[in-house]
Image (cartoon, rainbow, N blue to C red; front, side, top):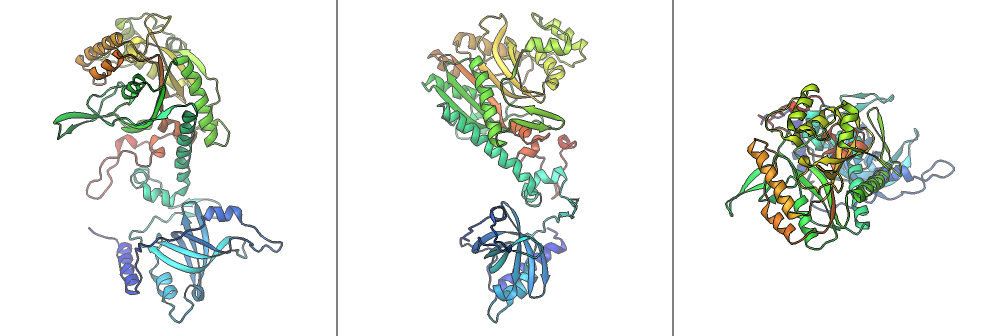
Length: 519
């Protein structure tokens, strides 16, 4: 492997540190007591401007800049919370006759990006900058590759930014080091999940875990990832949904269960799709989709407010979106009529193909009635639904796991929550009639025979569980990644995933991902 000049110098410095008798990768615990941001936020001063607290602090992090001025130096240390200035004096960190800790290690062999630990006291410089006067210095880890040097001038202009999406997503460890502002996206993601989990716990639901490797792919209309179990000598699938397993637990007698789960769908990648994504699904016995709509409103209002200090409004591009309930409710047929002028009520497959032709929507012979309606809605309606809107009462062909509508022939009790032109949640009054469910699965098999590779498979064990009896149940799945996109104002799903799916690197170079060219 050919190394750059800087990489070679760093390896030389690594050996020189060892020659000083210092281990560049020590194993001992380093006792951090404070974070940079906490110090800056809580400094107290007397009437003369002298710092009166934080007189004993210990911090650790990366050296991000350094100014050597003979017997003293200034440096910037970056920890997980932010940056703080260090003042390092030769005679403080090397008080005896041996000055190598400062003259050699700190001045010569310390490189930007290296991890160090310091202890000292907090003071304010003449220019008013909160700093740490270092009394003790410990080397913690050598960085053998140079970080990109991102510079910001006094007016806030950024130079030499590490901004190429291909590199940022592939080397997230570099991205979040030199672009620490993006960490806030992931902190909000964590707070969102915590708030949602707390809400579901308060509802009395139990958090559970279900299999990721499944013998039958089910619970959604999607193309699965397929693998093979060597010991059992059977094909296995990464789950596309956890729905059928969670409903088995309702059959088993749990009144309410939920799971934050990774799902895997072997489909395309774009700004709103990643093959691996996170969703929360929960199922509650003795409830229906009307109850679930109200619960969904309350959950999202609570969770978004918890992330944004009580504010339920977020901005995504030019749109301000308010997650405070109640949300508009609109039937799928009415939504299509409102935005296309076409009436799909009672339309058979031939009529729907004519509608698609008039609307210039491309379709193929594998698509049944449900897929055709889905194409019309996706192409002509979704993008108009900016504020949270429940699209309700879907055609039965689109929803093989949903209970038939209690008053409308040919429909089911299903809703999708649309926000900013995208689906965020999908929910049903769950189908608990095992005879009806078997017929729906058989219809899916017919679609598979026509070439629909997203059709559901027959799941005999799930049908058997329903035959033991499942109470009336409401269920929902909420996409975490898209929700995080909205509350953080991001337009690309890659921005809210620590490690989005990328094409493999070839010959040491990152091959550009064609699907992310517009990022």
